[in-house]
Length: 90
Image (cartoon, rainbow, N blue to C red; front, side, top):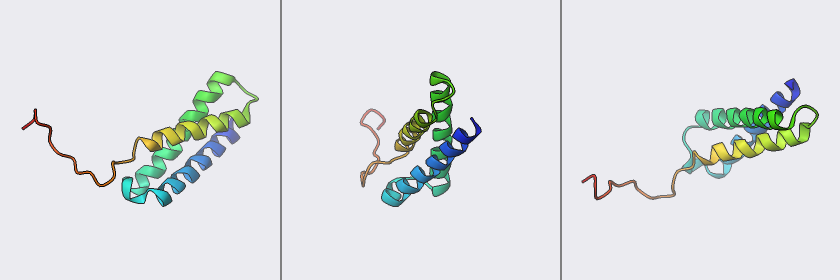
């Protein structure tokens, strides 16, 4: 379980790095992106390991990358669109 956690954290950081390289203008600060990627991957590894049990290292890492990617996708802001107030709020 220790190696799965270490591997999931490293994969989350690599995923965060790739997201920052390709979507740098649409993401918040790098610190928030790295933290979200690493913690999302750790949670994904925990969730997958809890569901499958021990002995499924590759599947656990796949689950870690999947949940890490989903949590990183929640940070992406819309492209070039200004946020305006709704008509009901005015």
